[in-house]
Amino acid sequence: MRRITTIGIGLAALAGLSLTAAPARAAEPSTPIPHSKPSWLSKAKHLGDASGGARTTAKVYLAPRGGIDAEKAAALAVSTPGSADYGRFLTPAQYRARFAPTPATVTTVERYLTDAGLTVTGVEGSDRYIAVSGDVAAATKAFAAPIGRFEHSGATVQAPTTALELPTAIAGLVTAVTGLDTTPDLAKPAAATPVPPDAGFRNARPTSTGYGSLAAKYEADFRTPLPKFQGRTLPYAVSGYTGPLLRSAYEGKTGLTGAGVTIGIVDAYASPYIAQDASKYAAAHGDAPYRSGQLAQVTQPASAYDLLDECDAGGWYGEETLDVEIAHAMAPSAGIRYYGAKDCDQGLLDSLAQVVDQDQVDIVSNSWGDLGEQESADAVAAYEQVFLQGSLEGISFLFSSGDDGDDLAASGLKQVDYPSSDPYVTAVGGTSDAIDASGTLLGRTGWGTVKESLSTNGRSWTSDGFTSGAGGGSSSLFDKPAYQDGTVGGGARQTPDVSALADPTTGFLVGQTQTFSDGVYYDEYRIGGTSLASPLFAGLTALSIQKAKHDVGLLNPTIYSTKSAFTDVTATFPDVGNVRADFADSEDAAKGILYSVRLFDEDSSLPVTAGYDNVTGVGTPNTKWFSALQ
Image 1 (cartoon, rainbow, N blue to C red):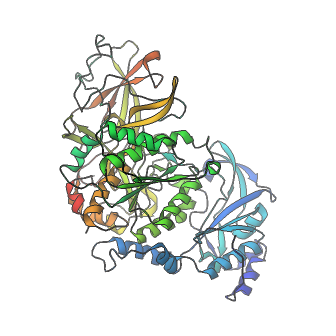
Image 2: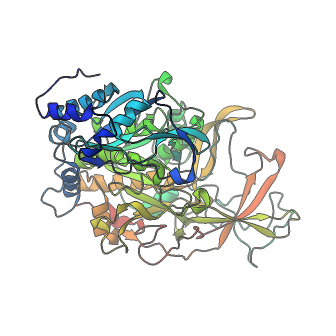
Image 3: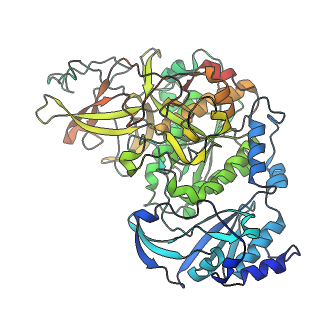
């Protein structure tokens, strides 16, 4: 923790404010902290007030020097073609000199918090936040908000019952306070095929080698007939597209490889097998071998990993494997720098901060997010500080838009996911792609799946309803950014911005060491989700950055001003669905094979339309994208 010093800027007045009991302080000018009242309060059971002696912790995020509006304007200016400041990016040291909170700000807020009875336990290395601990009574005094106990999300939690408030003189120095709401805010990977940590997963057969290559007339024994679907014989799903097919469909004959560009990937934890798995996969499927140092990992000591069970740590290994293998497949010469967070909560934000402080990457893919915006509303300012710094340094952030469509089935509320809804990142939605064995694109539509299972008598198909689809919709937190003017209607930020392959029925083949019933070893399986779309688009953008010979920062101003670089996705597709065969026990036929039809373009209430839509954004990148960065 830094040593606290005193300065002479208004401290007498501030000390007088902070030493007054919370109710008496009401007469002093105060300002609410945005998004600090939990949105879930009305849905939770209130158990009464928290004990004044109960322990609490918080992180108090500090406003940038010059104000948040000035920082946002600067981030847009350096990222917007035609701006006088376009491409004038900062180093981390230059960023801190211009925007980091001043020592006076840090000291003033520290003094206020300690006078309220809280203990300052540390200041983040770049002065992003002040960490404090104490009891509920001190927190109530500091933030002028009662703290209650609630039953919420299956747990008993503490949380403010009203918006937090600070004296106006202090509030202007603070952007957010996190931690007083103790509800777990655990991000999940946006992968639509399970990657179990304790049970291996592999594809059942039959499968098509390229889209439509094998008609689903019979079961695996090729003797038992399968029923037609709506009078038609559908093809079996592909075994999983590989790099050569996807490069053909998305990149054409470009000679670009991503040389000189580094793709950052942020997930939780780190697979102990990633280097050997990625190398084996590349050799098996026609991707370039990794050169020495091309894949680097920035990881935590084993003792630092936390929330292993709550976050399903082993499940994140599959996410890392997917992200690394698809990024390398699309940009085989690009460097890959993987950041493994200590957990799927605060650790992800800490790793993002590490990315911008190190400034070693050009573009960052994030295949994770929260279900909905509201659970993470209090952390928006904390995340945006990182995104803004990254944009000012020329780093582009991508986030998967989610795998639950409009979120209604998953959460009971139509909403979009965060951080993909943030205006300072690019949200990547999903498509279903029909690519034949030669690499020719036969058709593309938006990803949204309704499942029809084979009946017990094997003569018909029975609907199981919507299972998954690309996330998107209207933000409840953010107004429509200027770069979406003329493209989307309404007054709210719309997601996604762009899209790429995500449907697991037409998904990507990955190779991963897993735990099977007969041992731990490498095997391969098909996977999808917007977890696939984000790193795929990162690989394509690495080619664009290579061609442009410079970084871009926030991609969205370029995306919306060069829509010809994106192909509008339509509802036309070769078939209404594909037949999938899946092992009942996920790894072999010992317990039988389950057959289902996976229908295309059924994304909950989100339609695919001409022009922009909330499944595919402005569309999928075509080869003009490689020349779109000015």
